[in-house]
Length: 248
Image (cartoon, rainbow, N blue to C red; front, side):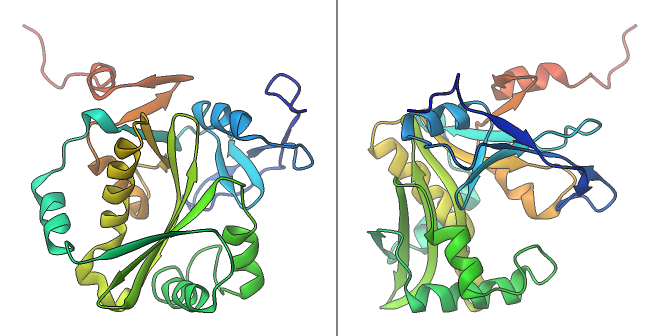
């Protein structure tokens, strides 16, 4: 059985970065033929890897370190005033935890979301095959969390169960209900669910300061960021930022 010590890794040739238009990127992948157990997957997440479909990857760029893995230690999390308002506003939302099977209404919501929000991204144009390979053909410990309001489907959060927490893989929602802030609500729900399960972290993937679509991730505080192979707290991160004050 594969373990982290025997797992092989491969790097892609340099390609256009999906997030920063003026950058080239290289991606490191775990051997796609390997049997990735939940223990190995959890260790990979601790090392800053993410899952997309049946691929486990992390950036491996030579001249850029913009992609920063970020996670929320849920026992320390403190919702902001705006996040508390979102929770209060959505108190009537119902959720259902489901296995990651293909459902036509899920796909149609995904298609509507991609067309409205990500027509400039790698997942456009959406298709059923692409949806299956991205979200349905997944890890054994993947769950779909279905959010509905007054009987109407309004969002789906795809989340993986790790040994030390949850990993937020992807959320898509009805773009006609932007007023519900389902994207933020989904993260808040997963933070609360991780805490309910008495686990430590919600992994949020990569934060990229220069990428507008990623800026929401550092709004869940306090968070930890993985820099130079170490997970650093907010206080440790502040110490890395040079002071603008000149000394006398």
